[in-house]
Image 1 (cartoon, one colour):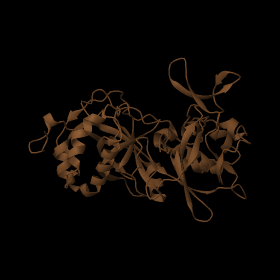
Image 2: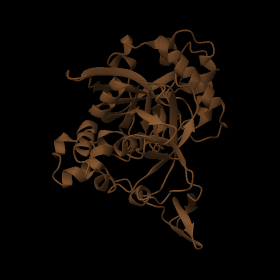
Image 3: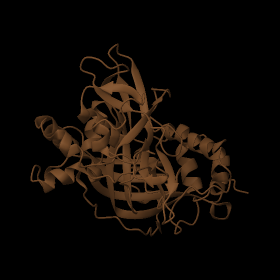
Image 4: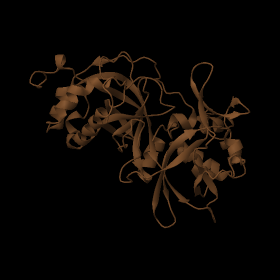
Length: 384
């Protein structure tokens, strides 16, 4: 899903900087007895997820770097997982398996958690009636090239010169007209804006059918948080920025909504995704995301496939946030997820998922589960 790049999170919407954005990861080993709610976890449901992670790892060369800070002693390379994944083949009890083959390390007791979800949006595959807002596929002239600083950037070739790609205002103004790039049509430019923030979504067609569209590139322009714009303009209070407050403001100001949205020049393109709609969209690790079990992380801090124990609070409706202590898996990334102790929880799709994701901005504790190596596996683990 992320290659997703821009998330519907508190940080992306308001441009806020969470307290814990450290660029270093200091790990402290802890015991399982210190994990709040560990004994109440649903270990049976974790086994298929662990096996899916191992299947994905088996598809990669052993030397593949999964990411992660250099302070992580093991788990950064596919080969580091070989023993734990081999033991999983004969494991029957999830709790015993995890306690045998993973060592918990506290990353921080001041992690910052946000959420993202897969929106459901009314759409049509043909233009007509109220469906007048195009969802564009990736333009053929959008290319990547190496900048003078060595980084890869998106842009286009103009008379032999590499130039920035069209920004949001230019695209809204018709820069892509006539190229046949439209893959669907929406009712509202606000719906398109929030679809682009999420990077993936389910289009609900007039006949009740569903089609998923997934991220397929961006124009390369900088992302400007709309919440920050509205706070700077005095339209929203700094403590009143949320998905709902931004959407409500845009819909209440139809004469200004386009000009405000165009102050974020970033633009996302999509492709039709015929994957299984019973599952979530694929994350950057190449696996379908699982609601309440998949998180986006800063890959320079936390490797793909890494299990994380999360202790935080989730908002459900109008009630006070409730404690939420569960094991999740690093399977996605996001532009705004930077630094140690940052994670974005995939909440699924539907009204509840949208509400939780839009209101989740909570601190908590983060524990990394590093796969043990044979030399430090507990007695009786069967390590050779």
